[in-house]
Image 1 (cartoon, protein in one colour):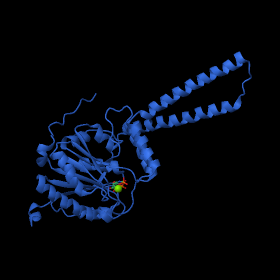
Image 2 (cartoon, protein in one colour):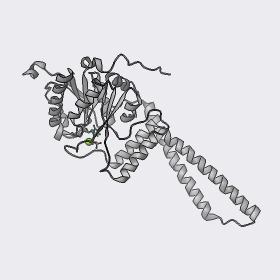
Image 3 (cartoon, protein in one colour):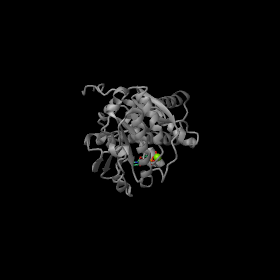
Image 4 (cartoon, helix red, strand yellow):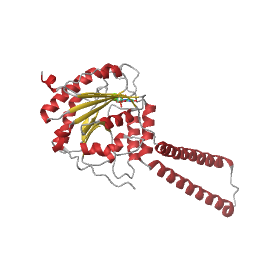
Length: 339
Ligand code: UDP
Ligand code: MG
């Protein structure tokens, strides 16, 4: 078995200035808002440098965009902030893009934020202060409330977290988003997790350390539309569940046991009726219902087991999670910034 790993050398707050901060931004068809976002990030980097003597870099991960995102990202000015541009060979999905950003981050602490303007750069200061001033390792944001969301969706979200956290030692906080800051040692820990089926919120919580929640209301998208439709969210939930928890398998076993016990009791009652009461038992409707119930449940359970086998297959194939097609690094010029 793999022994545990010591990342304690990469301590929290006190070595912050030496380590600096990498801001990882996955972008997929975000051409419309990218320049504006970059300006806000440059301003943020200046503030952080003045207040915490923190050196910042931003890592844009172009997740195979089909619009002009890539050409805009190539030419973003390195004003007071180092700029890395990592372009993936195709669209691998947000989780893969986040990992690519984490792998390329060179500053120690890592902050993940969306490229669509929903995660305000101005909030970052607050997250950084919980890391440097208060010494937390994982500072995550969570939706303050879901009042404006449809009831069905809220119920689905609650069900999802109940299932994924069932029996788990380290609970994944409900409503936590991908907007989060990891201290150098937390980022180093996250980098060591080898799985191919990434579920970032889950992994970032699983690593432990001192975690801190900040309630936060995401802003509306600056441009365009969300890429996460209902269907994709359901897919992501199944992905998260099966790569993180065996609760569905336990439910399958429990349901199978309950059905078997029910069938046994039903059988006993039929025996009683024929032998003791001497009734002739009416046959086929109850038989059909029983068969269809058991058939349906069996198919569903095979599907669940299949999901896990699929996970095992993709872990076994051990393919790289993403390919980098293009990578550029531009360093900011402090002399130019001073002017
Ligand atoms: N994103 C990505 N790859 C994808 C889909 C999305 O890198 O395949 C990025 C997208 O550019 C954005 C972030 O992930 O920066 C969040 O996406 P979106 O705003 O569509 O999701 P939502 O905010 O609705 O959860
Ligand atoms: Mg968004």
